[in-house]
Amino acid sequence: MEHAHPEPPPPYDLDVLRVFCDPYGRHGNALGVVREGSACPGEDERQALARKLEFSETVFVDDPERGHVDIYTPSGRLPFAGHPLVGAAWLLDIEVLELAVGDVFARQDGEFSWITARAEWAPPRILTRYGSAAEVDALPSPPPGEGWLYAWAWEDEAAGRVRARGFPRRGDGITEDEATGAAALLLTAELGRALNITQGQGSQLLTAPAPDGTIELGGRVRLAS
Figure 1 (cartoon, rainbow, N blue to C red):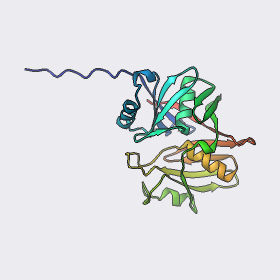
Figure 2 (figure 1 turned 135 degrees about the horizontal axis):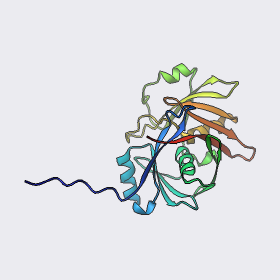
Figure 3 (figure 1 turned 180 degrees about the horizontal axis):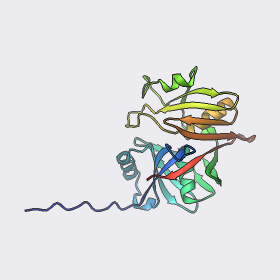
Figure 4 (figure 1 turned 90 degrees about the vertical axis):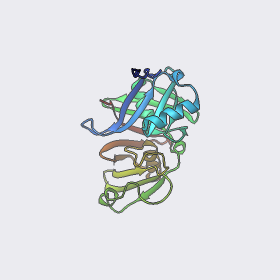
């Protein structure tokens, strides 16, 4: 009688984080981080792993001291993305992430982790304003149409509070994005003001534009249980 042999463990260590949690540590967008990128070195290999993990993004750390990271969705590679960089900066406890688009500065402020970036680094998104938070909540997942949709409405315009949902609509299994840092940067640049965004099931993203055109993006990060 033949006995089944257990599969060998994967050759990489994977940390799973939740980025942009609410004040109680709930929600947040899941992020996979492969600390030793050399264990999964090729683009095809990384893409295959990101597709297998099915997180909205997976980060491969190529140099933890200099902050060299490589970001993948289940269907492609990204030069920049918000929640992976906030999560990676928190996990690696570093002050600068060196990307091809430019240096992303990071800092910790109490319970919040922040990065400083530019909206033009973010991938394109269709920013669509709705009349109320209830209309955003009522949208099907995903809404019909093509292109990455960021649906938003004011919850309290005077206070800068926004209700949002994100729909990649790219056919890779990610029907709705729980928390989208890149879209938060684009919306902040369009509105020209600091925002407190509630996205998805209850994730919280904070933004603050600076006079030099950069934008700080922050939130809470937790290790996934």
